[in-house]
Image: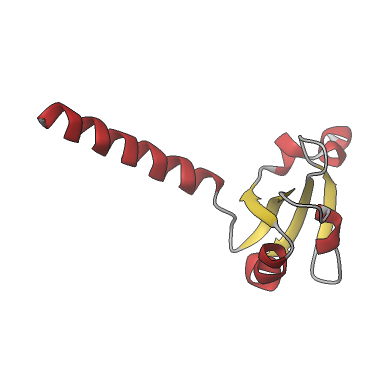
Amino acid sequence: MVTGQVVAQALLGAAAITMMSVAPPASGTMLAVPLGGTPAAALLGADVRLRGAGPWPGTLVIDAGKSDIFATAAQRGIILLGADARACSTEEKAGA
């Protein structure tokens, strides 16, 4: 019984750490991942700057304020993840 509770707490802790590591920042570099038929490029506009292609097909690395695009992204089936531009963006890798 106690072992099960310890395992459950460890799993919850690991899940919390994972969620915090991929949560999008309030503003800055984010990875836009389309889950439906709407391409990630649908988020591009005046308040969103394209940094380059993401690590997976259809994903984009962008600079934006989360509060500016979060609702639009959710409505279009696009999730926003925290991203390190140096690791994700082909544009950044080419300039390194």
